[in-house]
Length: 223
Image (cartoon, rainbow, N blue to C red; front, top):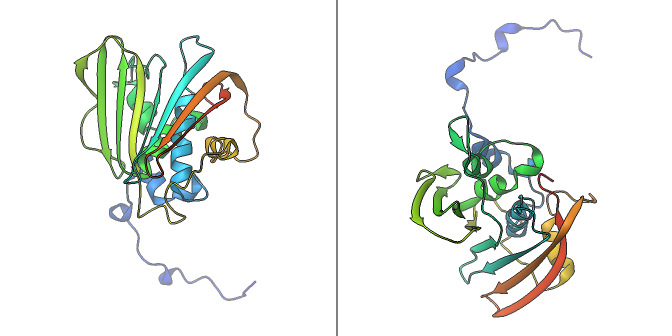
């Protein structure tokens, strides 16, 4: 420890103008490795997949989730559940908060996938309407709004994992059960999550023109 007296004159001036305000999505983009590791397309896909698997399914014990990897490296994940809730909370729908705000850690997975994507589109079919919102680099470019009427219920998210932030590579998922489960739990390694029912995951990879299907334990909502 130095005996030199502290010289306050060497401290650079700092004021409020130097503070960078960040949204929750902005913080994820600023410090991505706090939320996923490795920084890869697989981790983003895992966040989206686990985010939907962890939602309330309206009492169903088995759900179906379709995962499609497009030839351009983008992906979509869709479930056959009741759709993200659109009840109002503090002036926003619950779905908007799930997609872009800080909630409990287990509820942040869709927001993480959103923030770490070049673009991210959520389509929610529930309560007689289709709702949609688009984000680019973690910034909403449209409001969460009704775009059509529908008799269906499901949630689908489509996204292109960030080519700038994900320095550990794009989606590289192969068609093995082990890989599917690893991706599901990518941002909570080593945990033994509580489960409730099962999910049938159907994967179609347009890059290699291959498909596969697995039944896995489904996470309890909020894990």
